[in-house]
Image (cartoon, rainbow, N blue to C red; front, side):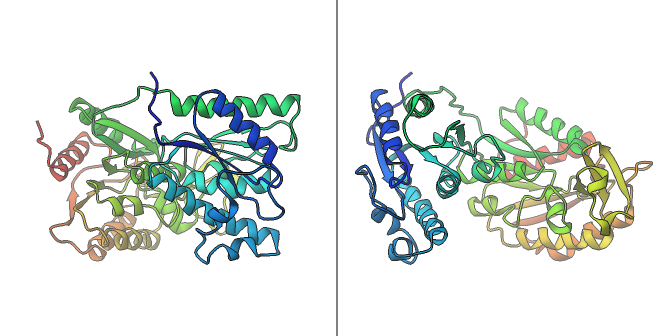
Length: 412
């Protein structure tokens, strides 16, 4: 099925002082596939070798300090950084005006770093292709938690030859296909985001199955830092309508210094959108590290549990739990929408149960007590303590009931 792109174009982006001919070739490929395309110059040094449709001056004006802060800077690194900041705002503005069908960029290390943040700022689902010399290495800084398709250029993006024509041609036709062909993935069901870890899988699976039976589209995210950020990216893109944040373990890694933090902005998209939000304390009994030998020296005498050859878990202390409670509490206190926090008094993970290595009622009590002291409870912010373990069926059922009540949906 053909997707309507009337009034919209593919924005093809590169530093056209060094990648002008290559970008023009990509633009011709996009046009040959019957998609509209605009070439955007983000060069900062010499003049473009091909005339762009959107000039570097037009983009640079979106910098917070004006175009001179981009184009009259002698240091190349500073100029590229400033252009990247301007491009983020330019592309976002064009998208909000309804002009962007998709984006494609070309670059080496510098160009990729310049272009990628603008792509990351666009909603999930909008087609994004980045042809790059670094696409065969660690792509995390360029992709982030976004759905960017990276294509390894094989040869440098430096001239047109038998290899670059094929790779760039494939990329051009790929973005054209993405913007013109309807994927048929529309789903009218209410989408819910859920966070899960292996040690909270029974709970989240139970909740998911109950809510799917009621017609919800449940999206489960592995709470490994990127999982939380990915979920919040979908929230900010308007593609998730409610959240059951059952497993907030990323906060432990953020506060204590583990390897799976979601960053200081965790919960921010949910707060901004004000969608129905249930919070619990899944896996806040643990901080994540890599293989046993990678545990930082200051933690090596702590209570550790080798989960597998690549993951070592550390039990959180009462004081660390109080710190995490304060971190969560200050976020919840900023909520302008209703939010419910459910506390499983008998343990927050599979390992936090009688006979298990992380069972520590004193540490859990510190977490629960501090949360009740920190959170400003009123008709919008409600805390419920429940006499269940997080993986008990009864606790899962309360999570479902509370979400339905918060969302104004009948329980049956």
